[in-house]
Length: 351
Image (cartoon, rainbow, N blue to C red; front, side, top):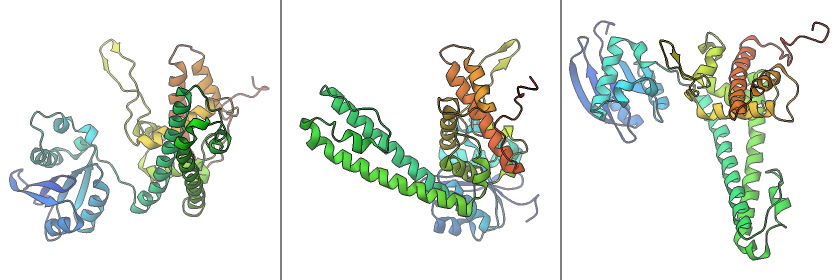
């Protein structure tokens, strides 16, 4: 079908069933139905349909649905749910109306949908390794905090140590009355720690063999194999961004804006985009500003912001460093440059 005569399909994805609304070239509803959110269900509903423009919302099912529909010859737009207040703030929100509204917005102007681009299937599979490791790390932290709380409640205290050495150093410090209760938790911690180390080995091999760009983006201090691999896999294609500054906005590290007339309020960051990568970048920024961070332009920039004082100065400085770090890593990825830690900082002779 030509561009002027093809159908526009709005599809509200559900966990088991999805609502479908089909509009003709004039905007009239020609079909409303429900399909199973499975590969067989999609093929049954769309395989024999003429090539159409299909609009879906980003979500848990959207990556594989996007690839499946494109393989059948349809054009797919993945709408950003955060940019659709006419849907999530509607007084008559239901799956049927959501599907129709998606199709109507695509007919008016697809820019209103703030389309997003999914990462490749291989990148999604490899990113699952990094995310699985993160789940185990948070599980280990929860187990350690629980043990400290139980021991503290009986008047004891477990000494400070690293996560890797917790089992060996704290096993002897557990009170005898609590050994029967906490020994299984120590064994679980030991097993979780071994699995985390196995994931670390897999991540190093994966980064070196399949994603050489991690060596480039991982040059700044504080950016380890986990952060660099997550950065490369999450962005997937650096050419998606015309400017490196756009990466920080895409990851939600820029402040929200509320400006009207003479009022220009200072608001928190948007927290849009990938939460996991944003957390990793903030962790790297904490290391850069911490006592073990080497002297770099980023560190000096953050420490200068901390000098302003106030209860939130350190937090704002950390976010600002993470924002600059996200842009710096993209710049290094695009250009392939060698990272200069003190670039832009005048030398003693120049000063």
